[in-house]
Amino acid sequence: MKKNRPKYKQIIDAAVEVIAENGYHASQVSKIAKKAGVADGTIYLYFKNKEDILVSMFEEKMGQFIEIIKEEIATKSNANEKLYTLIEMHFTQLAQDHHLAIVTQLELRQSNKELRLKINRVLRGYMEIVDSILQEGMEEGVFYKEMNSKLIRQMIFGTLDEVVTNWVMKEQKYDLVSQVSDVHHFIIHGLKNK
Image 1: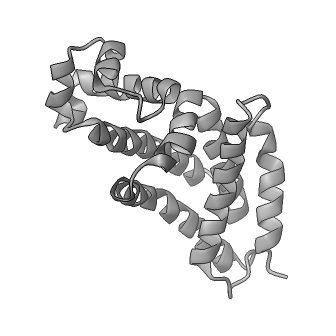
Image 2: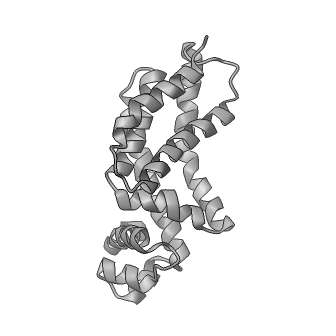
């Protein structure tokens, strides 16, 4: 499988940097190849085109992101702690990789409809984590049972996404992770079983 081949990760990491620094449309495959330290033709052994690099990059990075969040959440004992951990991990992982944050928050948004549909498929794994936390919270009686969980899931993701986008737009001038408690407090109080 191509993902296990040594240059695949090199190219993905280079693509994140090049796209973050130049924007998706101005990022030629040759720039990505140069950053990765490979010949232009080598890229085409792994990817069909620049769009394929972008989707593969998102699949790879989001896949890792989801696995790390799942592992951390599995160590928590209730929905409240799991939600806090989800928020903390979301912010921490993007704060640690500002190039990736720029790509996910800005560059992926400018892509065409077909590309956005592929990205939405990748996001399903993340949404399933949110769903499981909401379900657990309802079963524990902590979150109200009559909620429209699909809508709430979108609202949670939208809140986290907007907080990160704002941080990226402000050129990461403040500590993103310091906002975890406030965001958690806001969401948890909206979900509480009254």
